Image 1 (tube, each protein chain N blue to C red):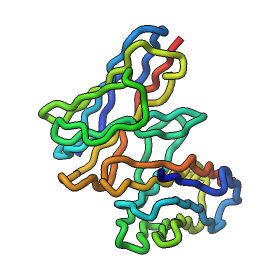
Image 2: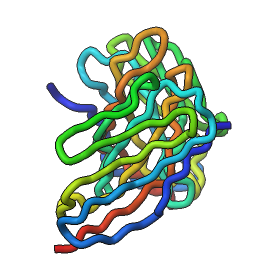
Image 3: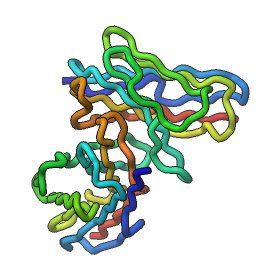
Length: 112
Length: 115
């Protein structure tokens, strides 16, 4: 059974710091991996999608990497801003491509 | 292009009642998935539909059911509500092919409170 773990559960940093969020999964047979952001009481916003054949994706200040063999993904946020404060969720799409399995998330707080 | 829409946004029901939630996917998206989010369990997969067919179902009791219409809109129904069904219910759509789903786009969710 696929399990997704995110470390740390919470993180507080001062504005301007670069940071890394970690995600690990137990079964390397995945269709793709997606990083989301969720603001309190809101839905999920897709940040980056990495196909199983890819190693990384970049969007603005965000960079996500995928190492299927070790079952790990990282989300790198450069020059963090208070507006980056949110919960970041990692999810893997099962090999059939029909269900996302989520980690519990990392709650990020960026102080000005 | 309009995003995924869910109605209603908020709902308060009493134990034992039933509820129907609605989801309209992004235009052109044929795959719709449903997820339940609670503080204790996090986000859990309920079911996925493609072209009116349920392709996958999560580990939830039979009280949870869904369907998809020919225009790709989807509904989920929960019968005999229990207090533990209080949650944020999220719908996602994707430009899926028959071999599986692509990038998932989520709606704002329906907040269900069972009293």
